[in-house]
Image (cartoon, rainbow, N blue to C red; front, side, top):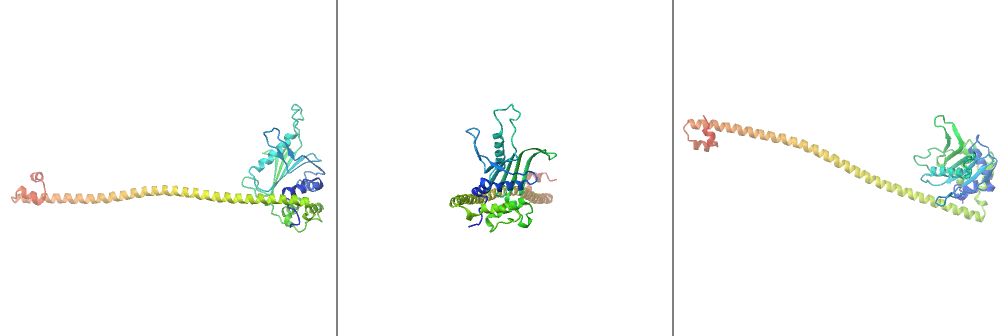
Length: 335
């Protein structure tokens, strides 16, 4: 059994970052995440379940939802497997929190659309696909396209693609780097690093120690662990099936394309060969016909000359016809 719990199971993530007794961990993480921007001293956990505005719409359940003493709302989401439109979903979650703050009964009031800033932090424990984020940390703000200056602090999205974090312990210079290293390696750790330099990690070690869980807590964690493993197995099977199907479709498409191209090239080549063969045959046939015609004309001329001599010697036309093969008309025209 691993010494520390898996922080990316649903139960493990909420134990470390979504409980009143462990909120010091969340406060420390948020301050390190936004070092130099915010200094949070306290958080109040909000209701994670957001009911739909109407019966025909979907409700929302956040993984962690809190409000800071400095006046920001934080939504923390843990996603262990790739999901279509996950980034769009995170935007919808933030927008729902905005709408929940708007006073619908005072539309004419100048404060009707005043709301607290929403920070959405997404832990993406899977490899992003093409067209999604392409680095470990992606910060998105509302900014002017040309000047890059922030236009409003009301919306902030931070996407952490965990598989793209490649730093070793010696390379973890910032406290935020240390957080990410510990979280991504926690199940394999035999001791908690940096406890001497970062005191909050002593609490992290306490709350993440699997040997300190009560029987009820262990059962809840084990159930969450099995769910996470089942999801990963299903995802791997689906990806394998998709690859096999993609390969089959690709091969079929390639074969069809190859056959079509081959047939087209074959027809073109056949037509070209046919034309070439036709020309060759035509030339050969023409030469043969020419030679034959030439021979025929030459033979006819020779027969006429012979017929002239025969007639001059007093031979009858009938005999001349017999020996030369000329017609009576041809012989009659000989002068």
